[in-house]
Image (cartoon, rainbow, N blue to C red; front, side, top):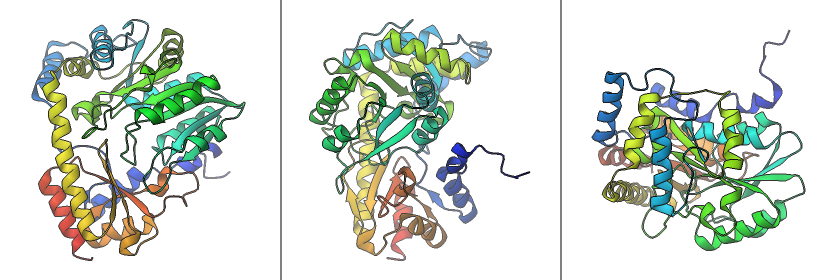
Length: 387
């Protein structure tokens, strides 16, 4: 009997690059700029709310299957406040174990063998793994190098009669771009023409910088009724370990998501759901300050990597800076990342892992800047020792 019991379709996903590089970080005592998590906690009032809930017993047992009413009301109010989107908190919102479960539930509910799911790549590695679980066919459309803008013509050409879902991500991980209104309008036209459903991963919705304002595609004409919007409390409030996410949208789509999600984690994070509900009601000052703080860290890391000689792709949103390493003599991101860990004790993620072939975008590397300024300074100092 074969020792590899893992089913064939999941073998390409057996080892996560994040697990591999985090292990390497521990082995080499490296600064981890690979995985996208902050090294400081979010607002104290959110932590206090979670502690109060735990101490009083609120949420310590199974919460309601679709999420606490307080969280669903807060999500609906959030969508109305920031985007003027009207959502019924009872029928149009479901709480999930992080944004990843929201994406998984949506895909498992909507596609199966014979369907195609189109998305721009490089793309978060979870996307292909989940699509493979559904039995559907993943269809990656490369972003245009060197500036990582969406290729609208290539997207249009990728649509076939089998295409059912467009999986969209903006602000975009790993590139750090934010799709603008013109690009989203062109994408929406294609979606409407071909009667597609959109799963819009907006986990980084509040982490946009300068004038690159996040625009939910569901706010465009004709798009709300065909869009599932994914959100993340972990990214918006710097509590990634709590794994509180959600899906929102029209009842017809969210009811399908609910039907699947109840058979995955069923429920999770009761006290944390209530704490994130508190966070969603924070004043505008909080959301402005988190953007301001992260943009300063973006600028610090970008300047440091540029000084070393890399070409930096301007970051418009997310936690990530993308660099082209070819100007410093490297053409393979994997080789570069492994060398960096061993010689400099710094971890980064090669873009190759975010593509199907592993050959596209070989010269690009992703760096997480959601760290303390002194950590970013030390990382660039270490890298400068060999360049």
